[in-house]
Length: 196
Image (cartoon, rainbow, N blue to C red; front, side, top):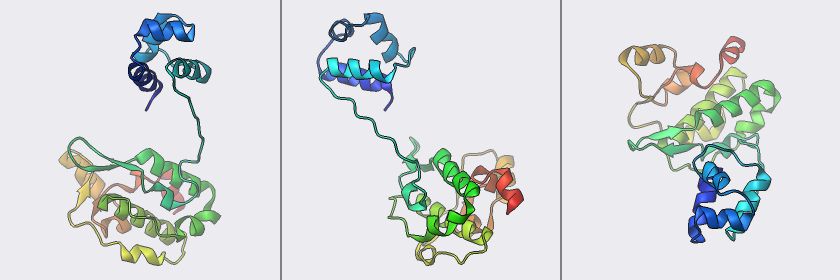
């Protein structure tokens, strides 16, 4: 949830108008309006002030997006409006970039079996990533990957036939074995492929 949604939801839950919230927070009504319309990003202090005026408390936490473990990525997906499971490519790339910078951590990062994600696509993608990481690093594959059954239907990102053919020829064998059509450079950056 972004700042605009937080402010609007808090204001509506408190049954306040834009003007009433602004008056309570000691800011201009135009400021509240601009924040809610995403025309202005509030500072943390401003956001705290607005939420406090609506009777809510702002709590901030910071955490690594992957905590150095593949298993921390089981929630890195969502259901797309068309009903398909869509991985969070940004979070997955951050994890892979982290291991590219810290290759000595690869074994520990992929050792533990991730909890079930609720998505057959995500479970298989994490297993394929662990298999490729271990193969590239010349490590034994984690035993838990053998426990994940492959996809029942092939999976690929939406693409034109030409893009699909190009992705198919560039899909890593570990991904192919699990039913993916996904060019390796969708996850592993070119620099990783050059090293591997």
